[in-house]
Image 1 (tube, rainbow, N blue to C red):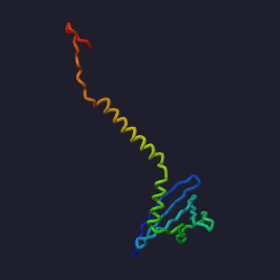
Image 2 (tube, helix red, strand yellow):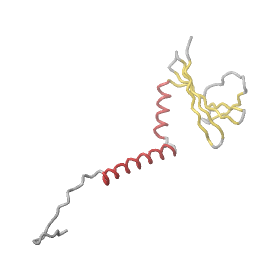
Image 3 (tube, one colour):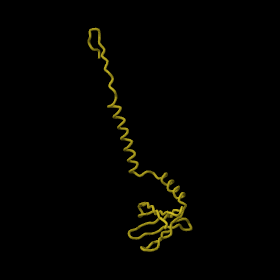
Image 4 (cartoon, rainbow, N blue to C red):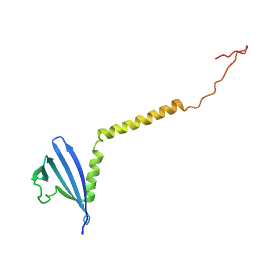
Length: 134
């Protein structure tokens, strides 16, 4: 019996709730990719038309699994995912976390410079009468 490994990624877009589903069968080196849009209880599956544009087809509950958008060798799919991840700007939270981490280390460095410096001995200079000059 073949095992199925399904990985799901959700992408929320202002125009609706887009979803990306991937599936790799344990006995195959191919990854099947579905893209769809959920709008309330309705779901529309995307396929690619002859002109290269997405064609959205409504899928009714209980219907057979719709045709995937694409079927790719898994290494090719992984290259696409890696390329997208590399070009995708970090989320606002990731950027803020990085900035806060940098600030934390900067403040730590400043504390060490100010508070952890070894004290230099104070040199006393005396004049001829024995009084301190400084």
